[in-house]
Length: 108
Image (tube, rainbow, N blue to C red; front, top):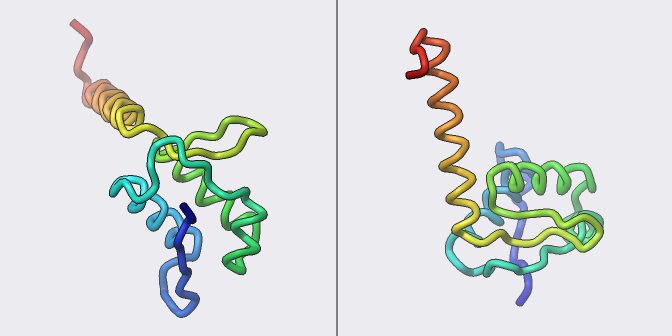
């Protein structure tokens, strides 16, 4: 299986955002299964004609979204859907609690 991604340089959307959106879409659709090892930052940057920092920024955003997980020197892998859902739920709960606190709600 290969990562099939093209970046539209004429688009008004930043390349890192295009890359982030395409990988996220393929991971959510199952085209990239959980556990799939993504190319290295340098390898994908070279393949797509992007700066390594652009790819690294997309990978960091994907990790923050729970779509991928980085395992140190072993690489970056597509996260299991359940893991991503649990992380998203936890982030939503934290955001709700923070907002409630700012609005003056006291813990019970």
